Length: 173
Image (cartoon, rainbow, N blue to C red):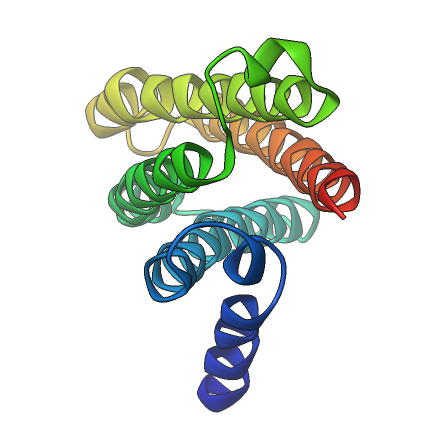
């Protein structure tokens, strides 16, 4: 499985902006890092949503606090890495700053940044508000429910990010 993941990530080094923009090696490395970090964040988030809802439906104790603490660190790191790599890719791709508001691709990029920022704010809220509340009351089912809904909203944002990314890729070809 790990080999398959590596193969998929490396495929981004041979297509799209990697081939057409900037220094190919640098662009390839940054693209693979961006996609890899985004996959860690998005995949982890979707798995967390799945586990929280499945345990809720089965009336199994969630232990949301442990899941929240573990995922929070991974998500924050992956989001920062994906964001920095995305910024570097954008600098490589766009010709001028005005391209962000004067071209369809640029407007899609701004939309993606906005949705990523909203998801990041939601994650920061979970980390700085919900997790401390859950630490103070680890067995509170209401807090577990709030966390489950908050993470689900982040998952919806991730879906929007994937859709916008697909539109970005399509508009770049």
